[in-house]
Length: 326
Image (cartoon, rainbow, N blue to C red; front, side):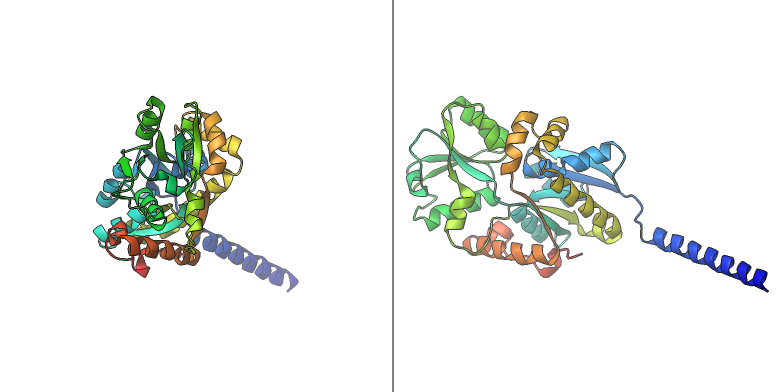
């Protein structure tokens, strides 16, 4: 009798073990092939550790990374389905959602304010001092343009009359203009700001755009960068997307070790030199905000952009379905 009871106990234990294995397998997402696009700069920096993990075959998915100089290289690829997940400016994410009729969703905010107004000289110490000046910048039709215009307007300057804004297509062009002396005042994001400061004697940080934004008392932080996903890809691969978000957060957290992250930035050509990257990373204002917290924070920022210029977010505020809440 005792022998029979022992056999039954062993049998039940075996069944339970098998069930636990099956349940465990059922909750583990199979690796998915994911095409990810990032822009050189803060979004690339935040992805560096995940790129390293992927190169070592240790990532939860099979990632193919594309590194671009600007968002204009990425947006068409998302629209055509060539890219599944992309790191882009927040306002362009809203515009793309409108243009594609909801075929993209926001997954997380990854970058706060990273802009600085640099000057080769000593004439600028306030926004008012920009009157009559030429300001070089990237980001026409994206966050940088609307942020600059909003700050100028709120400080009593007409962006179309009181200053001249000279737009270029990429940060590399902005750096080249400052190095050559063609530009003496420019609004430059990190890590390009740190890069060019090391190259041009007399160039200095005249104004912190993040601080100037905060002075406006808008009760809304700058939220400049995010990651988006194609809605169809998310629908078919939600578990894999969740794994990406887990790894992406870890990758951003890894950047708290600026020296280690800088080595990876140089390796993957996100920033040309590790020495520059190490100085720039603490100023890149990297973050990771997802879910309801993301939606609550970014909607206030979008409202400010919309009130200033509806076209900045695609003509209307994104619907609730634009935000992936997990």
